[in-house]
Length: 460
Image (cartoon, rainbow, N blue to C red; front, side, top):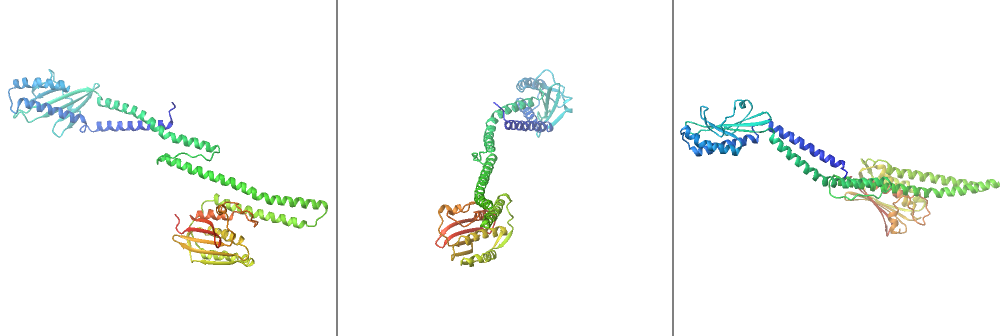
């Protein structure tokens, strides 16, 4: 089985934590001998010996022979049980009783590390010859007039506690190494799926998505990947549609120009130049139309390519609409259109004035272009809570339900519609409205075709 790099990172991190914790514990043990468990353990053993001795002898001092006779078996038994040398001395240093025949020399111990317990016992520590020795001593108040001093001496392998601690660490490391396997696999599994999806996406499959489970960082990464994949799919799809639509829109004028050019060439070859001006004017008209179309395509593409415009301006909506209607007055007079307005005095904060102007110009331009002579165009501006609402209605035959949404797609043209246009006006308007956090929709009404746009006055 191949060991993953994430598993190794988890395992090495865990080992580093164990090493640091071990060094910290060793440091605490060696820096503070008074707080060591050995000191408390030695104190308890000394007081156990003291309490048992006082129970055997009572509180009065008896003859040395009697005390030795009573205490020697007791100390031997305790010495074997505690695996220690135990002896008792009198107030002048004389030996009262001991667990063994030899009394260890304790003169060098008082030069080592010393700890005094709360009960008044002294515990000394000394290391030598691969062994660690601990010596405890306590002077009691009994017997009355002849107090005993109790001595305990332990000698054991050096670093005995450290060895046991290391064994525990090794066992813990083995257990951790085993339990880290399913943990690392749980973390790695979604990452491998994410890697596989990213690889397939790199080969062109933009429909790749990963399943999101949980709410951890890996789930957030998966959600970010899905959002990125969705954005890329939309971008590529939009680019493909734009390329296809541009090709379609440019093919028709190019075809007409090619026919006009061939007919013009034939007439020149036949020496018949009558009507050539019409062909030339037609080609010039097609060139002008293509130039305008390309310009609109470039402007529309910039909405996707450029950064979101700063929404830090305030637009006078009533003044803007009045100015635009004045520009279309010639068309209204020529077609004898009835233009009515109901405009509230509203200003839109936190917006891009040029963007709002483009939106209204495209909507009003379509209204004046597609309204039959002697028709009616009405423009309403009102406030609806935290939104401004702009409604443009013009007399027009009802649209099909699917067309009410499709008209906002780039290059969409209504069937049987002979009026020239690029099919980009409403598409650009919808993009700019969404940039401002608003909505735009189309619907049929008794008064005619209606465009309803709402833009919040407070941007999130």
